[in-house]
Image (cartoon, rainbow, N blue to C red):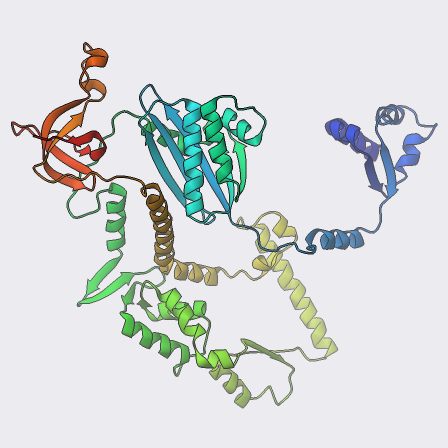
Length: 513
């Protein structure tokens, strides 16, 4: 009894604010209340009773644990009227801003419900304060997320002032800040948005890029041959190309489950799908099983999973008939004969038979099952691939685990990983195109031609400190020799001396003779 009382005292000491604010109900099948309130209590029990007397504690008899567990389970997992099973897609926006005397930089990182990250770096060529830059990043992030189709958004910002003003904790007194606040409230009027302040160290994604955007001078990388201009994209292309090989003028892909997978064109893919699905050896399997059979047969094409889903869905026989995978029957002669087993084998149906009603045999089956269960538990206790709870209470995945089949399934999935990666890249590119289109809809393009004369903006160390504010803002003229990509040009002086780095059109203006 003293152990139970001591446990209650320790809980009251650790959770004292909760004990003081609420009525505590203690469920027990022991006479704990009688022992605590007994006038004969002496020693530690008496001291503990006095310590617990300041709290509102009620002692109730604990009912059957099994019945209570079922009731709690039903109450927790039963949905009410109008309650949706499927949750809303959650978008996350991380914003940050940085500014100096001349320019400011805002950075937005948008995380889609699928886990893709979209980064947007904004350069502000006008004097701003740190709070104004934070608002600029916030407005841009909301616009981009809305264009991408976001409805439910959580905004993570490391500025306490901006977050508190939007949530209504702080009053906004500055006129410019009020206009920013009105713009934010206008954008969130038809969205479900939650604003959360986070520490700066948890906002590293946006913080580094915001500092880079506020830098006064940024270099543009050189173009390298026919490969993509970005090193990451060029390296990715080289890695993808290394996975394919030509053998006797036939293209093969190096696989994980098979050494080489033959790459098929559209006509060849249609033929093998039709033959494997409904041919002599076909069993009208589902799309996933269909693709695995194609890979085991040594074939590959990038859209095989999507094509298999469309083919299986449009199969006439699969729409009219449903073929079972397993047929369970007793040991009757009408089911347990060679003709029936051959018929099921042709359709890919497995035969499972019930054990006969024989007391001696049933007893042997129980002993065998108990021995097998003991062996399985012994093997699970030595494994490290499950959580500790699954050792004592085995789950379905643990009982059904087969190491060889699991390794084979992993290798089959690795053969399809290129399609998953390509779909993620296409989805990310679609988001980026939508955001770029929205961001550039009011941009006025300035394009120059080769041999045009331009002036270059004077920035950073190029300024003469002795001239102060009266120094020129533009220098030149320079002649354009070539262009690297849209908006980036190589320059040379009028004497033919080429400049070391390319320049962006943002820092150039046309020179008229």
